[in-house]
Length: 110
Length: 110
Image (cartoon, chains in turn purple, orange):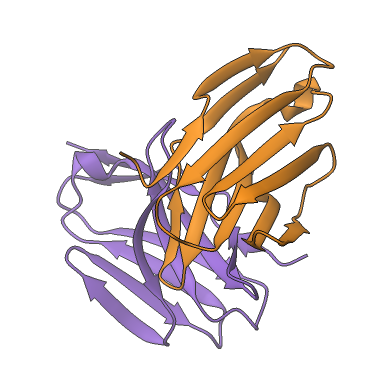
């Protein structure tokens, strides 16, 4: 069973701080990884995806991938209360199927 | 109009009843998916379809069936609903840059 593991949290950070969200995956064949944000009762929204080792930045968000360690992370700089949500990590399998982690709850306190 | 539309948004049904959840998309994507989400378990794949003639079981297909009526339409049926099928159901379409999710159907089986 291919798995994506995330700490369920909640992760609490003060406003303006850096939030660091982590994810590990079991399938070494996975090539692409995705971070989604989901507000309670709403559908997941894509934040960014990464498929190369290293860092990828988009605004306040940085995704990091280390294939040797099978580790993906998402950094959120200058965290805002509106960033409070559940963050889902997903790995893409053959056939464009996404395997999701259970999500990490992030709470940004003002 | 939303790119991926799910109906109904909410539904309460009785144990043993047949129910259909509908999904339509305007993205023009061939690939469509049905996921269910339960608290603490993340999103789990029920069925997926690469085109009208290609339908595949996902991780948790027992108790469910699907129909791909056209490129734009993908329906999920519960032939005889049971209480542990109470969940939030998402339809999604995809291309290589990721998934687009519908707004979800909250199904309660009593």
